[in-house]
Length: 210
Length: 359
Image (tube, rainbow over all chains, first blue to last red; front, side):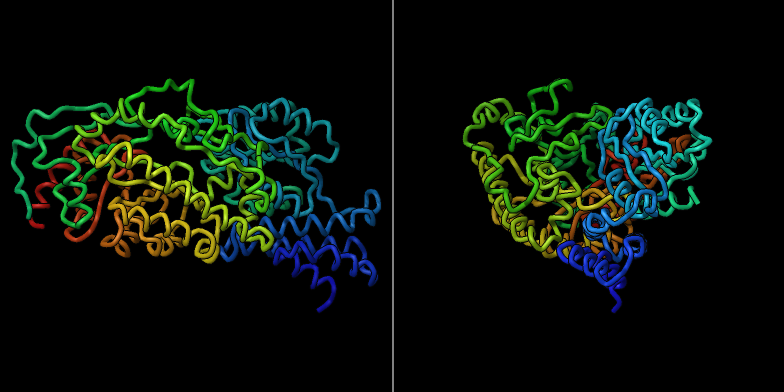
């Protein structure tokens, strides 16, 4: 098995203990940091597919993402400034009035693993904060808004409206998600998309910036 | 033996305020007590379809988790502004009034590595809780109710782990080879604690409590959190020890589990729970076909359109009875996710009473 395939398999299987050595060996064998990063991103795509088809579950997906993070920490010094495969920055958070973060955290991990830089603003985030942070990032491509409660759906609507009113819609796509949210609701409030789970959210993010 | 339906049962009925902020519900002239009917349902020969209103969910403040999680049901009234706060492990919960429950504010975990649980966690001294005071104010109420009394352990094993570690770290700990043994040991210690709490309830409310509901969410909207294998290895043994203990004490063992957990139902069956509460997204008809004779499910009625007429509600009640209330199967109707109006509940009672005559 080639080293890149081995690295990809370690990510898929969530073997965090072994990834650093394997990635270092890959570098020592002459693989570039970008090749290794691409292999890991591709592996996370496989992980996403396995998750969507209920062949693996949340812990396995989290372990895979954790493994990739450890792998990235090894190649980070070898990635020249500006030479990353980053798809841009995604600013993510749970909207004001909502304290739930499980889904948001999973989406953040999967989006990061898909090749985005992620700025996680946490929970109970006011619209102004999303706008401030996204506006300050030149490469911000996506704002991802999470909402679990039906009672905070109006706040989701309000946040999207304010992002649009701030004039960010031209350069930034808005994704929304959470148990009560579907594509129809996303369209209704002016967002660019919604996804039913973390793996689909990462796919949607890639589509939106393609 | 069936007790024949008598028209006087539905004459001059009282309408009582709903529990948990739910809609009003009718109180009929019952031929047997709610408790007797519940037990009859458990034996597959119910006299009518019981609803969640037919049971007393006894969640007193003496057990600090109840107030922390915004789940207090006893004679002492606790204003909503005082719900939330510290649970029995000193974890702080924030009450969210819109949903009637609490959550631990993200980022406030007290345990980073499950291996450290013995060093980090301070188990409660349950002897120091005011059991006498709780019994003094609630005993008569429970004794006179004629209802089955069910007490809730409202933070179960995985939920407790989440409250200590945050969700992501807790989920990883369930499959991480370096933490799994520690998690199993912690779960066993929690079972020991649950058993001691049950013993306290039985000591202070002798003969008045008939079952306990263990609360442990295993899934999200789309699928379970874990594979069946992880549940088999990490959760089934400790749940089973708890259930076996409850059964040995002559108590019902019930399970509340949120999420799309259909693929974990064999695990719940293996554990031996008597009744389970699930969300409407679980396939109830399939559950009924597979487990309807073995386990009672708190069945949610089918959705009725917003503008339904009274007759449409009555028809929905008859459909419910036809599907789930049959000789040899166990049935109760939940009133939380899809509360039904009095017209539905009247028909549910009347139609199921008449049907039970043939049991």
